[in-house]
Amino acid sequence: STLSRMILLETRRKNLLLKVSNEQLEDMIDSTFTLLRLGEKQQFQEEFNSEDYIRELFLVAIKIFKNFDKAACYLRGDEFVNFIEGYEYDIEFLNNFQFRIEGFDWERQTPMHVIESNKMVKQSLEDRYSKFKERVPELKETIKFCIFLKEDKVGGMSFDIIKGSSKKFTKLDYENIKSFQRIMNSFYQTRYLIARNNSLRDEIVLSLIRTLELYDQYTGGHSEEVANLSLLIAKRMKLNETDQYNVFWAGIVHDIGKVGIPSEILNKPDRLSLEEYDFIKKHPTFGYDILKRSEDLSEIADLVKHHHEWWNGSGYPDGLKEKQIPLGSRIIGVADAVSSMATKRPYTQINTSHEILKELKLYKGIQFSPPETDEMIKFIEEGLLDKFYLEKNS
Image (cartoon, rainbow, N blue to C red):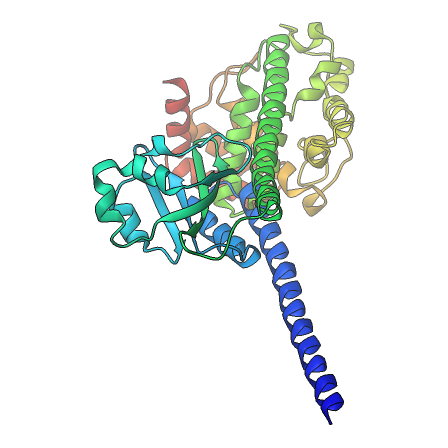
């Protein structure tokens, strides 16, 4: 009957709408996860490819936004715009026209909606425009916006509607694109703040250590020396990046607990008494107590606390032995000893690489952990310790 057919057609229409709606929902969920993944890539990867990154953003954008005829993404070059990816555009063709960067707004915090955007293209290309429009239809409207990628890299996207098209940008289109831009640039801002925060924290720590080294006149530059030697050994042992980072910074602050030791003991020109030496031995614990108060530095507190433990258990402060001692502490312990032997101190002279090797071999398995010591021995035998000090003192 007619009624049955009407019900069937309406059911099919609703099923089709439901299918489209479900596909749009799946697209949105997929796009959201993709954006989060890209945000993490930008924030936490030291090196990431700007071209690949903006291309991936663009592919997400053209899935989210439907109301346009043509679109492109690009990067700011030194003189010309570098088009990376397009939708209904021939990217090679666009790049051949060498659009100058001056024709694009690279600082704008909100999207630019341009009516009669063809005038903008004509103004940018001047006498080359007639050749350009042989391949590209005239544009009616454009929404374009910039994306901040790195300190020296800015990109952008352009969504275009051609003349004669039934489409037109709505206020909702503009607001959606504006939200997309804000999210993309928030990734950059987060990365920038993380970098600035890390840089500021690093400078504060280094300033504190350098101040300490003025306080302890015998250890000028020693902490950075230990940190760099520790990092070199950690790399040779193929520790992961996080462990390398922790070893380096634990090396930087390994003597921070000396701020709790009176300067007259630290800088005493004569031999220390037993009581004074016992007091000096508290500096790893003092350092641990200082570092544990900082959320950023608490991970390396244990490494600092145990860098004077001995492999045979006769070190301090806790008498740990063998693999009870954290790996980072064992590396720093070897690097600390090498740095001390290579530097003039009260009652000691600068040791040659040959003399340092003899000490390391003598105390391997007693004071020093064998695997880390073997790596330091190879490092010295390859002539790299001499090279290290030559570069440091040049």
